[in-house]
Image (tube, rainbow, N blue to C red):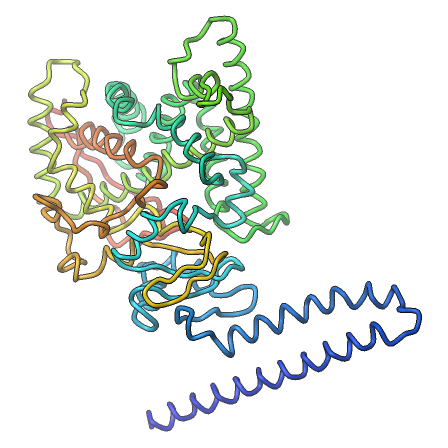
Length: 522
């Protein structure tokens, strides 16, 4: 019976292919006749030409699309381009909302090639690079063979930010931004992170028996970013911006359809509202700086307003606003996801919670009453840091990013044409038993000693375009862990709650928890 069924499927597939070939012949014949019709009139009828030209362009697109799908070039990576225009986008997007979003990549690695395969996403032909070799290749060839690329929705929403510039402009802008995000800056932030975390716990945790973890942490991380980068302190102002950011996030990587009711339309409106707020803040700050009422060292916003590049050029207002939008997005959404997932695993794994608690209590006991955390304390949180790393492996904060081929090149024996879009995902390594034995098991000891092999653990990417919030997120998470773990234990109210991506990982019901203060919390 199975043999008969397989035979039937093969017959259907062959019939479908023959039907597509027949359609291709008909379309080619129609195109030929249309061209003849255009020039058969002695007067070369202009109306006929105007009507026929877009028809011919459409026919060309259809013919090209059918040929790519029916007669794939063997020199190109194997794979499927899916439906015309849509490609495999409708398979790619929904997998983010499943318990195993990595299956889009892992299934195709098994079916086509474990090193590289082709697909079509967001209307673009994409080569997906897999494994540590693929990660190394893309991260090592920035501005040589490849450049950063994002889908149209990101380009339209973040416009002149670092996420949309390449080459020397990207280097210039990244250098200016990293001044407030490098290790030296982070050392100055630790005590302020500690203060904000303590104030957040007093306001949103103490005296409560239950709360929804994800939205509560989201408010904390956004408040911290607003305070550190733009000195926005008013809780009402922060809540208003956070509401717009929640809408923005749901449409930032989506079909760029600007029609009321679509995710992209709502995200565009939210981005406009955020930018207008940031524009007003920037103008007031510039005025205060001009009058010497504020220091240029106050925060990142002040730094961007007064700092010039090597040629003496200041960033424009649009560049500052777009980059502040990008930085607020990059610095809090991925961290919110990671922090929520850390809390989830600590609730599920009592032995891991106890290990973290012992470490954090030892650090707390070494401090004087009221003394804030310092950079040196963060360096002592080795077990906690390993737990964070394992959470990032189990549930990566991003599913991957895109590049664009600048020239034709060969990879793994296949031709990658200039202009093709390229995609990498941490999923191609983090769940592979060849690099992480028993990959479904939560094991923080993986990061002791030499740790994972190079290019196998890349939750924030790598190379010149590593996520700009990479250095910032880890101490932020550790400071929060210190303050929460030494005060509370908690239970999940929905033990089997699923975590899905939209586009960042988030529990489907917000991760409601029951909290229990320790008998003598610090």
